[in-house]
Amino acid sequence: MIGDSTDAVYGVMDVYPRTDFPDIRKKCTLQSNAGTILIIPREGGSLVRFYIELGHGTVAKDVKREDLHEAARRIFQPYKLEIAETFWWSAYSIGQRLADHFSKDNRVFLTGDSCHTHSPKAGQGMNTSLQDGHNIGWKLGAILKGQAGPDLLKTYVVERQKVAADLIDFDRSFAKLFSMQNHVTPQHFAEQFIKSGRFTAGLTKTYDDSALTSRRASTQSLASNLIVGARFPSTQVVRFCDARAMQLAKALSADGRWRIVIFIGDIRESVPANRLAKVRRIPFAGPHLKLMTLAWRLSLFGEGPDPDFHAFGQ
Image (cartoon, rainbow, N blue to C red; front, side):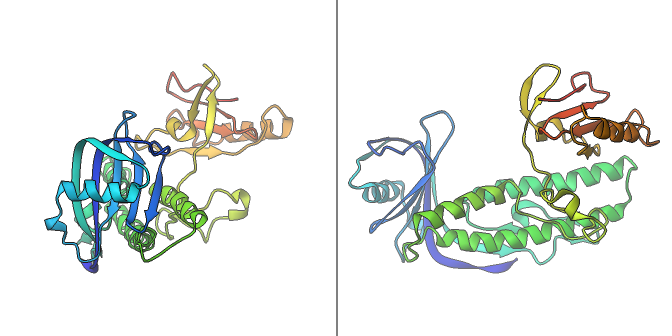
């Protein structure tokens, strides 16, 4: 793997804290002369994760649990911090590395931490690895079903190697936010943290042209907020048959099928309704096609073979 390591050492621990710090159940950071700590509330309402920047010259393998407790207490001052229990802890030095090859002869493929390593603070590792696995998984499924040829696997390298390179660059800049040597404004930190969330969700990535993606042959102006090559954005919709609110992404199950989402407008009006009627007469609209329409009020209407997916709307 190609990359480097830094002298920066961080401690991480999942703890049950007792403290008078008012924002202990909010995602935030504390910066003081004693160091920097990132606070991430965990599940259950009591567990909290701390990422703690340790002093220059610290050796990760020499760090003890009590060292992390004491560092956290110093950073929290003048607030009090008492740790009732430590569920898990570790210490690590930051290194960013990228595999120079993601595949061998289109038969062996690397995914996840086997092809990109970085700091764990922003939750990028697991999320990016899951996205790697999903990308290669659905393509292998399509090939095994006879829906595509083996050349489809080449798009995995085209798409995910660029994402991994962007991840390493992002991790370098994100790690600097927590360094005691880099004092940033609260506004800048908040902007970068929001960006990290979008990066983790895959909303900042755009795939280059390949056998699956063609920005050159697309008319981006027809849907300016749906970037060609980027992840399809989700929004809350209400299912018409039972008035149940859900995210649009939840309605599009990852089961290997392709979806065609048509932005037709308000189908109560004659022009959009006639357009929809024309789409229904297209020859490929057979029993295996789930036809859906996203209306102007972010309402979703449709019909399909699934008994619980007859119509969506608001």
